[in-house]
Length: 293
View: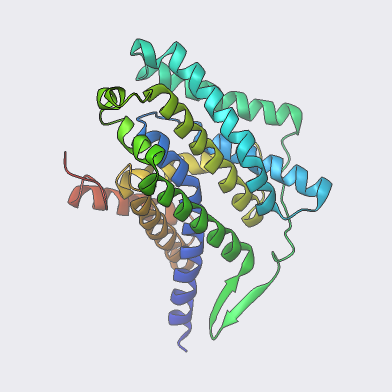
């Protein structure tokens, strides 16, 4: 096979696997930002918090990092629900969620980062899963399990979340809460309770993404900064409240970044990827699966 073609195919496959990590990171934000209209700028910091806890528990127990991240999701759901209660009490119910609410989540982000540095230190942490050093080879294409397994777990989690949102009464209420609160009240549904539940799910998804992240790469307290622009870009490109649009955008983002890095160097990949975002928004401002207002 031509070396350039082999490099291109491997870049596409690795980009799709990287897109799985991006999808896991962006799925929770799609709920809070796209469905609840809560601009949680601290979402990647929760992902890093989950990654660091997974790395610590993995070092103490040896349990698979992805299993640990699943076990941590109830605690992160409770954390997310508590944070939403504070956000609603101090900002949302008074109509101050625009600027003051954004500042609140900036504060949460820095508290998480500083707390991690004080509690754990500034060093990088990594969870070396049993399959992390195994690579499957299909002809000229490499499939590293340290990226394949987290991507599969991420897609299964997103699929389960999509089924919950589409086919359960509570899931449909979550999808409707940002569109028409008063209609929910007429159905005797408390919008605040629904948003609290949904925001908890959003943060639980961040914990799952953290387990995937710490298998793929080392993580330190400031690693969330790398993902802030990416996850918001993916959610916007996918169409805000569309989980499948989020997945498609994440895969496209991962492929564009990885192929660009393979041929032109990693310094070019963010510029090209965000350029693709601007091109998509110029042609289709509502994103891949967004609806025209």
